[in-house]
Image 1 (cartoon, rainbow, N blue to C red):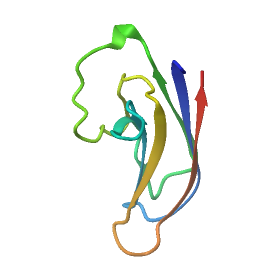
Image 2 (image 1 turned 180 degrees about the horizontal axis):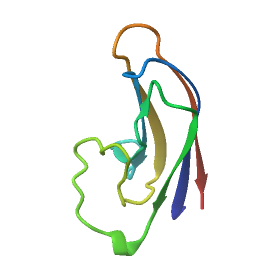
Image 3 (image 1 turned 45 degrees about the vertical axis):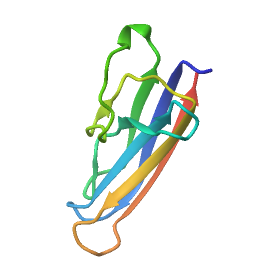
Length: 113
């Protein structure tokens, strides 16, 4: 079992208008794909933004144990201190202000420790 995960969002190219948005979430499953919980939501990437690298870290720490309501999506720019779980996935959502083919070229990597 891993105790720490470092997530890297690398936004390489943006071809969109300023009101288009990319949201990238990291979800964990504590029960092998039955339940998924948003653990990380990177800062929103705007259509008029520049290429950039964003990093988020999840780490299990017994001192972080607390009751956390996870029934809704996590806020932008937030990491919930809930550990790693048994499975990890990411979601990328593009919101287009108007039909026009917004394009965000990005990758997500995870490094486990």
